[in-house]
Amino acid sequence: MIDARERRREWIDGYEAPIKRALWERVTSFGAPRVLASLWIAACLYAGLFALVGLGFKWVALPALVWLLGQGLLIGLTLWDPNWDEVGMAQLTNRYKDFYDAG
Image (cartoon, rainbow, N blue to C red; front, side, top):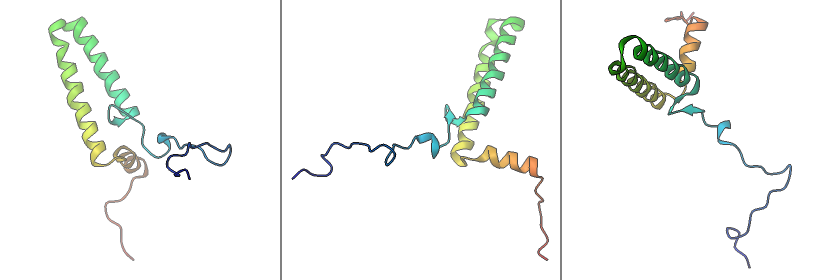
């Protein structure tokens, strides 16, 4: 008798399908929310280009260091609360009150 764990698993069309990770996990870039990480790296690359053209090659490391610290902050916030950016946007757009009367 063949053990159930040893049998080759065959998918039945329309009955079983593998679930993609993106359906239950948040999509991140370098451990931070994708949109914020993309905007942050674009801003730091722009600052690095500005430093290269305007100030010289020795100042290019400064935007790279700022990017590293900012990305670390974004990753830390995401580890603390995976939906911190959505909560912040809801707070800004919905104008929640600090105190509600109970009656």
